[in-house]
Length: 417
Ligand SMILES: [Zn+2]
Image 1 (cartoon, rainbow, N blue to C red):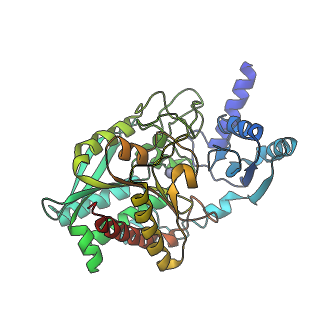
Image 2: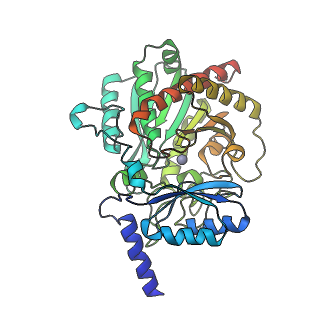
Image 3: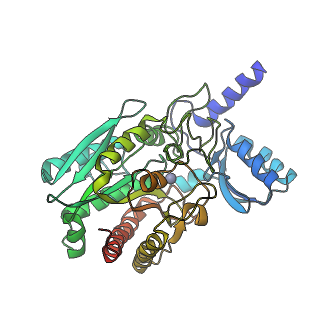
């Protein structure tokens, strides 16, 4: 048993590079796996929750769904054998994930190039850029630290306010560490809100107060840059092998009621209790402090191209304003499509994506009382997934800004803001 543990540890160490250097994902396979029976679902959930080096890109939360899973080279044969044995249909999407990753950042920005959106940035670069922008645009733009992470990094909220008396909009991005496109898009949009001369953008910039948390999971985000590109959770340590809690399963509304795991190694581990994660309590304390004035709350994720509304938990009822939420969401989807013909599907998390509980969109709506609350799942629909090539940052962000204009316009038509 002890030998086995040491062996497992050694394997996992070689797989995840254990704090030494960065995982290359060379010859890692990406599989799409179809779940058709409850037995297969349980098997995959078990596989997902073990420290075996597998990375599930989707949580296996229900039958009649497909999930993508990344499997290390040494495990590919074992995994395929296991799938065959249990009648699980699988498709190898790529045999070498490194080749996909290599397309993410073909051109690395140099420091002297300054900040821009043709490459992804580190947390440090983003925070430095925000400070520069605040110097340039104060007092309209300000930044506040809303607390510190488990590893003692600052969590920052950017506030944009052109005048007193505006209603508020709250946005969080990159609460899931690997979803780099979300903070890249939101910083591009912030820049547009400050500099665009498009009257529609000036209108939404100047007539609302914007509260933006560009990276809601700084520890995880840093870890995706230094060690493991596909890391999702926070970085608190549970035991020798298992780190991190899914911060977007840790909010205090219907906590652990579907689409979550109680196993610390799982990528959807809900934590020991609601708001057990300091990152989540930092966020909720801040949101509560502004909630009375906030009419629109947006949580920016990737991937899949969805606009999701409350609720996500097991057997949830319809929101009291479900029809309005749908109408506003659909308007955003229609306007986004006009730009680059990227379809975005609209509906509740549980209806159109999967069951998930303790999620920020449900908390913002039901507990903080923000009447319009959405999760965006940005590009794409499968080709690159979480490692969207940097050349798509700007077009993706343009679509998202179009969505913001549309959401606000339709919300005004319905007298929300
Ligand atoms: Zn996410």
